[in-house]
Image (cartoon, rainbow, N blue to C red; front, side):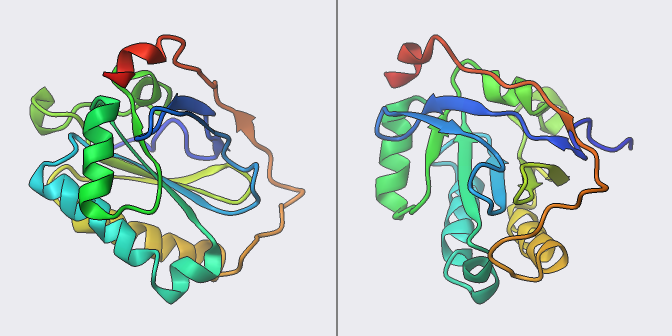
Length: 186
């Protein structure tokens, strides 16, 4: 399989509504800390809940805390569903509503299970906003948490901030703003 189109490029900026109906703009690289964005099929489904709770629990571990990584979850569910999902599971990070699939398009997230479900894809983005790696496993949700943990150990050795490499050239990816976000708030 060919490498993902975004690897080595600046991660797209995304603007979506969060679980509280507030517009959130994610600007990879703007905080100087790594970022993991995980796209999942649907809030409340068993594997999706386990994945989201896995990231919640991982944030309490030493390697995640040392890195100051930010976690963002994204699905096509409405804001009200995202709110219920966050509240029921005590998620400490934003869960964004991508009902129009604008973020999925910007990040080239394909369907899973032969096109029958939304894909489960996690992006590891370094402290400068560069997509370093991607994992795509619809059925093995645990792989996504382990993928991020391993990338943190490999990339930053758990440091709070990585220094930019002057010799590394980056190509910006497109950004987007879901201008019809009001539709996501139901």
